[in-house]
Length: 185
Image 1: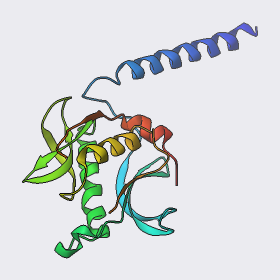
Image 2: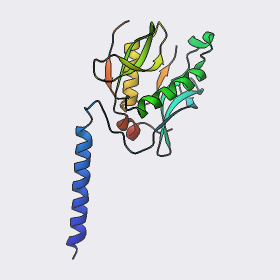
Image 3: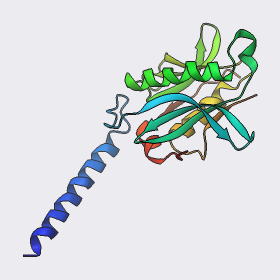
Image 4: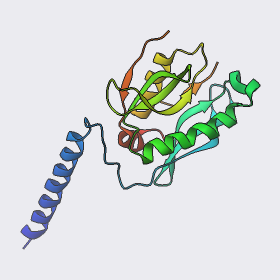
């Protein structure tokens, strides 16, 4: 009679493996089905070890945990009333909107309204779809988009820092992987 529990465990393992394999095989598609976890992007203050102070930070919240995406420290835009806190409060809802619209699968650097930006693209090689971050003219958009892609793909040990070329890069983002593996603060 001990066979029944073993069969149940085996079936559960097979179902889990099947589901995991299906989720893995869907990673390369542009239109993703996000997990049922309720992900919320918001701006809060977070401790920055490098600066040894609290800075406005764009976070992704899910399952009662927060994961830092961007620490805002540049004062470059402050002259136009866009201090780090204001930028964080403006950009965090953009991430939310892109996530809610399932458009956070590809990020790229580009130009919108003659400004360098990091934005979403609907496909690899596609034009900017949703604005995420306006950059300074002196920022290296390629470098910052790559860094953000590393953060969102769980390959970074911390958030992107927006602190102090015309190349373009496309990074496929697996936000599910980020939610599962990014450091929790």
